[in-house]
Length: 443
Image (spheres, rainbow, N blue to C red):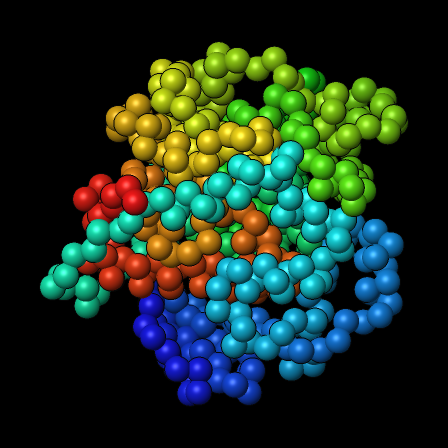
């Protein structure tokens, strides 16, 4: 990423994973919405607009409804000239941390507690980010980096960058279009979206929102297996190309931040949960996942998924060499090193800390991805150097969704793509595949 001045408009060109290229201009201090063009993994190019956050006051009626606990998120209301309302000026949206601050200003406090909170004292939540400070990058100089591309593949699927959208539940709490806007934003950025089983839209509707874009389905296994099978079958019929089994939620973690602010999940807006409740005739009040999910799953279920469905199976939520080896033994095509964003077992090892032993144990038998704590392009580069094929980001994508809908998602992902491109160049690498273990060392 070039070093730009914010005093003058500038043009930026990049290539998508599909080989196409396009140019976009970044706005000046007049805060004009600008067009952004880049090339997708399929080689096509297109232009997209960045959401430029304006300094308008919130509508008082909307704000009042949020304070009363309305769980539908913002609608990314726009002014007549297309600017997003309720956020600060565009020059402040330079980083993913800036995006977090903008998102907090438009999301109800109860919903915000769910989006950003962790388990227990939130130690693992903090450690996920702090772990990146325990490694140092070793860059090479006098390397020709006149042409740098962030394009890569995950399980053979081309993506514009080694950054995927992690599965996140209940996205309508951040924005009224929820997963539909997330799907469009991920497609605009040229990358892959993992869709949660407990999404606030069906797999078919999400696929229709961004036709042709790559998607995987994250699986929570219901005690009533017909519910899970129904979600899987609809997703595969809608063009999803892999199944991501979340393995680290046999029971729900203790999340005090959510409890203190009274977060209640929008059960009626989650098709899979509505189907599960209807099938067992349950109208009782309980936590959204209590009583529904199967807590007795074992490794044989991974092999069952591999055998029953003709798509790759990915195991998400492991942090040990032992489990990585078992995942490979049972047919997993990839594993995601993840502690559920610090939302399950507080005190668990940080994802980045666990990555080296998982990579060693897998030993090339499956692709390895990292989920947890990524906020910068240099974080992406560090994960690649430690052996990850790609990373997943959840909360940052949700921040973009909250303040800008699909445009906000695309903007956040583009910030991360540009930072990753910059990090690659400064490391002396022309592509993600050029990053090796020689580019990193412990602090």
